Image (cartoon, rainbow, N blue to C red):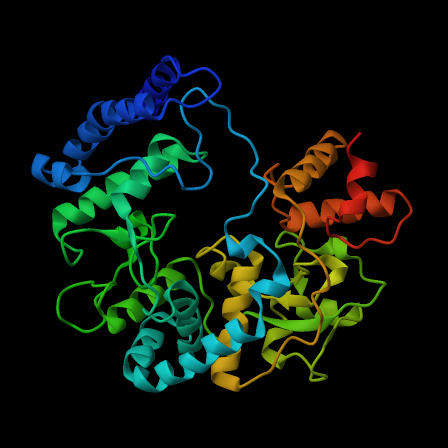
Length: 413
């Protein structure tokens, strides 16, 4: 079936286009053909009725304002603008108002939904503070309006985006949700990325992890707080949350410990990090029960920002959103909710303002030199950060492990 989708898209891509620009009317016609020839047979095979399919796409057109679109006949390119906040400027992502606002409302929700949170933790081992922080980040505890038509978003991205195969699968899952009558109301609403309900599950994740937390026999992530709480906890449990372990600790990293040691593939017992001179910024020792457990150096802004020793649970949080900043936000807000801690001690500095295309150019240059940057996508993940550090060390420089504008000229020739 994937091959069939590919072949059809190749056929559509070969249709005539207006010179120098995308002929949107022609692309809309290709889109309708794709829905009928690719999506409908797959949906029908999955048990979706024709009436459900027609209702889903009645009045639906392509949404040309969505990011990362690749219309037929055009080439994919790295966008200059970063649309997703989780991969943007760290200082802005951790603005005082955002962090404390999420924690303040989270404390209210902790009291209001204490029973549901306790039940979810007993069933899954995931602490209530973590569930609350995810809920707060995803939908403002259900207060953020979700305004997009899920079928329009998923259809557009399934037909012409940089991740077309992924979104086509999610479109089929959304049709199955509609067929089963799970969603309230006449329309399935989503984020601009196609995520649903208060936990912001992609449709396939809803089918896997949506849970009934209030005992009414339904898994209503749109209107039920208890179901939302149970669903988030179930999701994190599935991806390996380790009960009894924390998510991580802010630390001071001495100059003798290279920032190139960052990453989940370079873990060691936390006791070894302590022996290397890594200390908690709070001045307190690491909890005794954590010392034998594996820990990982995590420096989301390299030497230009706060540093952390994180546990496997940090990477479970990344299964919700593949962003270091996201997982860090959730862990930190959860700690503020339960323990009342303050801001990070480390300052983010002036980092994260480069264009994605500039970072992608640096990544491509590093790949040519034999580095593994984790993909030329313009996003400074841990593999890109430590590759920059290794390049700096090879050049006899002190490693900072973060892309800066001054590096482009030296890297990209």
